[in-house]
Length: 376
Image (cartoon, rainbow, N blue to C red; front, top):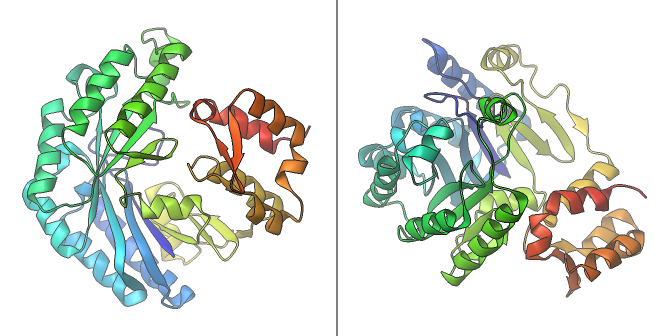
């Protein structure tokens, strides 16, 4: 079983962020920790000490958690569940909230993978994104992780930012690769509804790179990273051999996962539920033991849709035999005309029993996936 713990706190809200997060007020951290420990105990009783193969602290900014809090959480998790001896344990961190000492304490507790949100390598871009750190702090955070003994380091970047061009993107990648991370996540900037970034874009205060420029960033950036020895194993993710994210891979493969904390989603034994999004509502649901009461079984249609949507994001692609076992029909026969049209445009290919998107297909993956799962 995969386990995700959502930490909803940030030092401030980034301009592009649509995740459930907030600046903590007096008493919020203690209320969160108390409810999290209680939720772990509740789920442990319900699930019967299942084994956790990967544990992921996401957010928000999990690195805001003091090491003593993480230690208490680990202790409660081990009481409620079994944590596999080789479990991948990831903690997301922001540069302004990590020191070598703090990271060393986390590593000593069992954290064996750290994901640092650099997002950009110049102060102007970081300011536009509403980040709290400087480029220098980002470099220092990566250095601190190594000093703390982190041997599996992932760095996050955002491309397609206002004012960004292909050359500046490739320069950023060279700078980040020089830090020798085991893993890189490179996300296309998404302008989410209701964010400050959307307001600026609608007011034409900021202009994003055009589609052609963004296409070049994706293709040439991917080629550069592959040339540096990184496997492009999912649309937005690159890794040295053996350092692919086991947690995310398990999610893309449709494995059971338990979500803890506000807004966290769980899918276990074919049933799915979502925790309340706000801290106050989640704390109340934990107190009254009403979490998961709205759990619903996934329909066959939902399972097939997610199978296609998630597997085609990966380099391995969709196992056609596996799809047929679940659906009772052939995917290639169901969508023969669409697949033929996509193949002619070299956006999709079939090899060894798997259907995969090409790099050019990944660039327009949202449109392709919507097309494939839509009737007609």
